[in-house]
Every structure is written in structure tokens, then in C-alpha cells.
Length: 202
Image (cartoon, rainbow, N blue to C red; front, side):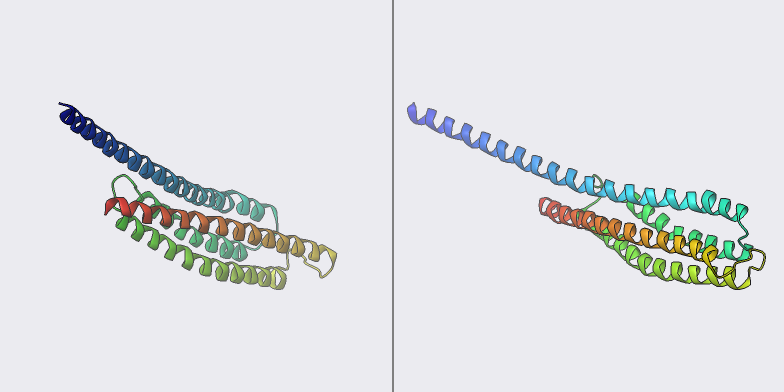
């Protein structure tokens, strides 16, 4: 009788231990999923922020500057064109991010999505630096060399707007570098989370 009771208690203990392990594994998986989703939400937020800021500059800020300053139409069109083309990778990234679903897709599918996203980010950075530099050079050549209506004269009146635009460019570069570093950290967090979640799939 005591042996049967001991066996029953032992089986009960094993069942509780097994249930406890299942609960612990589930909690660990949920924690990893939440951490990965949090990093993903940050990246989505950054891309939406970039999209909104660019749209404001394209649709409101630069047209306002164009209508209230003697900027030539050609100069305006070049800068606007570069900014509009620059929206393509942002929209493509947002489309890829919309396909990132931890609940319905496997880790391998999500890793391929992340890889595609990283490739777009890499090409976008190279293209953006080249396009912005060329657009600025073209803008200043057209404005300073061919815009006779503005009456640009070499002196303090010309140095001030040039200095302000260069300071704005430098500030934008610093902010972009900080944002890229944070973005890369969030991407590493997602990749690490997917690797850990893959173990649960296996």
C-alpha cells in the first residue's frame, strides 16, 4: 500500500514538473517574442517618422520656400525630384515590414524578410548620400551661376545662407548617423530574437 502511494506521489510529482517546464518554456518564448516585437515596432516607428517628415518637406516646406524666394523652377524641380525618388525605398521598406508577422510566419520566412529589408537599407544609404550630394551641387550651381533674378553677390549676404544650409546638412548628417546606429541595434535585436525562436520551432 505504501509502495503504491509512493508511486502515485512520484507520478504526480513528475506530472507537475513536466507541466512546470512547459509553462516556463512558454513564458520564455513569450518574453523573446515580446522583445523581438518591441524592436520591430521601433523600426516601424522610425520608418513612419521618416515617411511623414519627407512628405512634409516635399509637400509643404520646400514648395513654401520656392513660392516665397527667387529660387528657379529648374532648381526646385531637381530637389523635389530627388526627394520624391528618395521616398521609393521608404515605401518599399514599410511594405516589407507589413509582412513581418510573428504569429503566422515561420522564423525562416521572417529571416528572409529581414535580409531583404537590410539589403534595401544598404542600397538606400549609398544612393541617398550620392543623390543628396549631387542635388546640392546642382542646386548651388544653378542658383549661384544662373539665377540672375536673385541677385546673389559674393559677400556676407551670400555666405549666410550658404553657411546655414551647410550647418543644416551637417546637423541632418549627425542625426541620421545616430538614427542609423539605433536602427542597426534594433535589427540585431530582431535577428537575435528570431534565432532564439527558431530553437522553439526545432
